[in-house]
Image 1 (cartoon, helix red, strand yellow):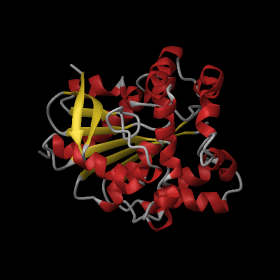
Image 2 (image 1 turned 135 degrees about the vertical axis):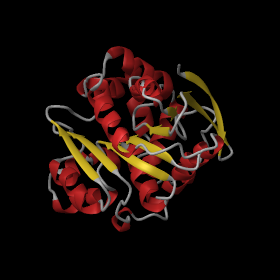
Image 3 (image 1 turned 90 degrees about the horizontal axis):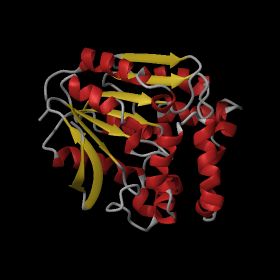
Length: 285
């Protein structure tokens, strides 16, 4: 059974979906999404014998919404995840991330490998592979143009204008079902929430972390990429292998886009269960 409750961590209060017993699997959503991304994976993993936790991250949870851009630096987002695991009494955990959540997952596996038992990432390539693609792949800069657009203060109001027409259009183009889009808008449909979520992009330049210098990943890693993903091209996706030294599985999913869990139930769930069965280990509490 999955229950929604408050998680006190890192001086903030996160809204999270939790359930199960056994090794902990921590799920990190991307933008513009929420913990609802993992609605299919959580019960499946509980049935398979895992403990699960999927929080609405910093800015997305009303109780974890500081107002300054600098409060959304990558190192603080990483600290939130470790603090959430600490609040659950778990030292080592499996980490799953999509999009921005994948970025945080790569960073944690690189800089805190003693805490991460295994890593599974959807869409977002290894940060160093992504940086290289931005300069060496003429296609990737266009795919990532929203990163620059988000720097503008007026971006939040533009995305919410006309009943969040831009957001709704993105969900529709990405194949997000209407009821799922509504759930995401329940989280992000106010200026305060969306502005905080966009601050993740604005704070990148303030971070002390340099993605180009990110260490290679030594923990067991699954990287899943939809071949029709409009935000990440094959250069960055295929190049990620160069930055993983541990056991690695790259799984291109033909015809799928940026939000595989939303596009078809079970596709990512099956890959994740296989990954965890291979690298599950014992409970890290």
